[in-house]
Structure formats: structure tokens, C-alpha cells
Image (cartoon, one colour):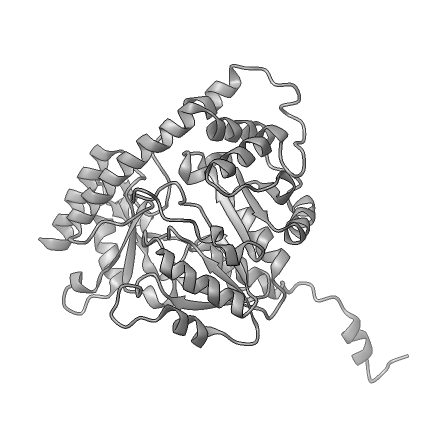
Length: 401
């Protein structure tokens, strides 16, 4: 039976070899191709483009320390929700910070990227919109897009101190009937901005008024250079039942390669996330969860954080001075406008290429938002202070000579 000259059979054919719409526009080349220029230059290479630390983690949480002890079942599957020793350490850590969270409201994930992916898949449906406060961590836009949702970029962290800026009005202008969630990262990558209590109040009131989820990315929570550190966004009373919160040990404890993070949320949301986690990653690596528990619960973990924060603050001030800007309030980056540094008709990427030829690799600001193509990001924790000093001297020669 032909059914219209074969059209019926054509309609039943599988879509192979086409690909899913969710994968369109996603690439493994998220950050920069400038590293190759630096490596070919013959100069000392300073990879200040990807956010990491040169510091080794706390000794008690190191792979070396783990290898010195025998743990029963270390190479077996871990508990799906998280190893009990790590969950206990997380509960204790959150309680010490003044906001107790029950163990059943926590899900351990293999890294922060995986955690935010699970959170987005639990909360977002195709066609939903997420207010993406910009500039932002480069991977979050792709995570949202892979869910079939739309990331609506809202320039914010670079605008907060400008005269007349109205946070609530800015958010209201970006709102549509499809808006489902807000992604907030404070302390912020890449600006180092920490939202004030008044700004958090405005954000919380907006989210509550429009019944929105808050995706709170707390990757840099331990790296605020203010004393005392401001209250975390997720601790606001209006956000208690509408926040899904991501914590990671990558930045706070130098454990980026261990891939240990966790989410916490209200019971209903956490149940969805836990179900997705079972089918996506099943569990995080058991040895690394033990390492994470040691970092959170041991004295040398806390002393490591304090020492790292002190060193990072020195690096931040050194970097800001070299770039003739104010030091960031937190984090591991400076984010700066390249336009005052351009020569003649030079474009921003040409400036970054000129810098790369000297051996210094920076990240184009465009990865942090479409409004930031003229900006650049520099990670001041990627190399030890003596190397950073050499990198900054090189950068100053290129930019200001």
C-alpha cells in the first residue's frame, strides 16, 4: 500500500543520521583557542584562562593520604545519594554556617557541572526561560540550552554600581510568561561581585512575587575577601523552598580534579534530582567522597581554606594593580573591559592574540555573555605567586608599553 506515492513510508523513517536539537551549538571548545598561540610563541606560557588553583588540596584530603590507608569497599559503587561519611560532613558544615539542612535533602554529584545539569533537568521543560544574570560561568548557558530551555541574559554584575541602576526593574523587564527560574552566582565568576543584603532582598522578593525557582551556584562561597562574609543568597527566608543550591569542593579546597559537589533543595525538588542522578551518573566516586569528607570535617581543611584565601587575596590585589583597576571582592578572577587598551582600530580578540603571543593566555569575555565581547577574564590563582608576578609584568609590557 503506497499511501500517497511512498510519503507514508518516508514519514515513518527514523531521523538518523540527524542529531538532536538539544546538542546544536554545544562545543567542547568553550573557553579559548589562544593557548596554541602562546605555546607556539617560544615564550614562557602563563595559562591564566581556565579557573583552577596551583595549590595542592588539604593533606588529609589528598590522594596520597588516601592511599596510605585501607578502606573496605573503596573500589565499589558508592551510595547513590552520597557516602554516609560525606553526607554527615556536609550536614555538619551547613549547620556550622547557620542553616541546617537535613541529610535527605542532599544529593552528592560528580562535580558542580553535573550538579547544575541535574538541577536544570529537574526544573526546566523545553521552551522554559531562565534569567541568566550576566556575566556568568561559561558552561551554564549550554547546560540550560541542552534542556531545550532558553537562557535570557540579563547584564547585572557589571551594572550594580552604576548610578540609577534598578535591579528589580531590570529583572521585571526580562520576565515573560515562560520565565521559570533565575541562575544566580554570588560570589560571581567572573567579576568577583558579591550581592549585598539589599540586593538579595530585591532578588528574593522578585522570585517570590513571580513564583520562580532560584538556581544558586555557590562555587566561590568560601572565597569572599570581606570579613564577615555576606549572607549567602540561598539563606534568605523567602527562598527557603524555591532554591536549588549547588556547592562544590573544587574551589574551596583545591579539589577540582576530584569532582565532588552536592546539591540541596526542598524535599520535592531533591527527590526529582535524586531520581535523575541515578540514571545519569549513578554515583560519585567513593574514594573522592572520602577525600571530600576529610576536607570538610578536618582541622587542616579549615586551615587550608584560610591560608588559600589569604594567598588569593594577595594575588587579586597584585593583579588589579597591574591592570589599573579595583581588586575583586571575592573569587579567583578579574574581569576587565579591554576597550581602553585597544590600539587604533584593533578589535578585542586581536588584543587577546597579541597578549597570547607574549605567552599570557586570557579568556575572551564573550564566553560569559553576549554583551561582554569587549571584556577579558584572568584567573590569578592558576599559577604560583612568583609566576603570576612574571605573567603580570609581561602583560603590563604588552598592554601599556
